[in-house]
Length: 476
Image: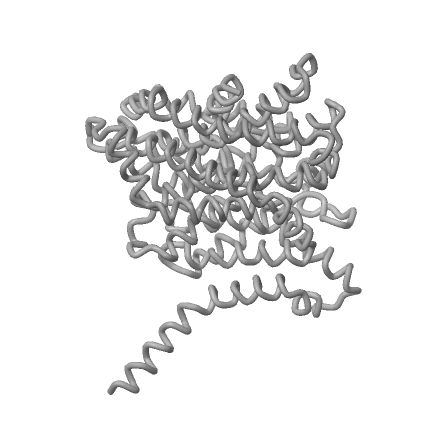
């Protein structure tokens, strides 16, 4: 368990690597182990990498994993203010507590949650994706039009490749992009290469040659001062993770958007907000327990990492389904409890060891820029051994830099790229189920409620202003 968590932290901190790649590398090495030890090692890597991704996100604005993309928004500004230790302590505390809350809840409510997951079918998946896309109006700063354009372009980029449910090529330039554009390559380009271009004119990552101030205790106190945000984000992560295809990246931004929406100080988000950092980190570790539910219950992986975990189950002769809750219940609960205990390891590593890495913020950019570019290139080629991914990394890096300079929302772009394919595929499937009738989205209660919530989010600001005007008029 400890070995898995440590390896996961290291792999998660490397740009472009992440849990799925780290687990895939280790998977063949688990053959000599018994099933319990193999699964504990794999979920340790999964859990550790979720936290590890925040290290690079906080220190150099490079999300080590897709689930740490939102961490860059407030973690990196804290690092630039000379509070890298505080940020990493907040991250470790939020990750450990968020993961613990979600997993304890799952252990207690396992029978009920399995029944709940059964209610989510194709129309519900579509509705959740649309709900996530609607958050663009909240997370996009400045011009709403630019935010919508950024999100729409993200959706457009995600359509490249073979169309879902039909053997049709879209924007593939012959065979160059027939496999589509990998989302991790998009993330590496937008957050790593774009930031390296920006940093090229600066001497160090920390602004104004600030000394690294703050301490671990302050970071812990800041994290614990936001208990509602922490618990709420952990549960959002758990619920999104339990929906197959949801994943940590979607949960990351959904939690961040919800924290911004409900915050009394939304203007602080993106400027080093503790609330934003807590929301992001509590949610991505919260997805771990949630994403395992459909994997062990129905053999439906909720993310790339759980797809590898599913491979580990099958490789060791374990079949997802009732067997894992009856004959193999000991193996299942050993795996879940190892994640719970692994959160203690994450907390210890984050508070006692990883905070030393904050000194990386004082390294000259002439040293760190080549290192990040090399790691990003290796990460790009390691994704699918496809040089188109490396090209994507650099082209999206230039695009990301231009978007930052022109005040277009990178977050909206990422939301579109994540949720666009989920919405499209499930929309087509829903219409196939209903023989082309749109009434399917109104007759299913869960779908209708989610779509109503989406409508309220989109029209909320307008309705609020209208209510204020009517109230003013009545008062006058």
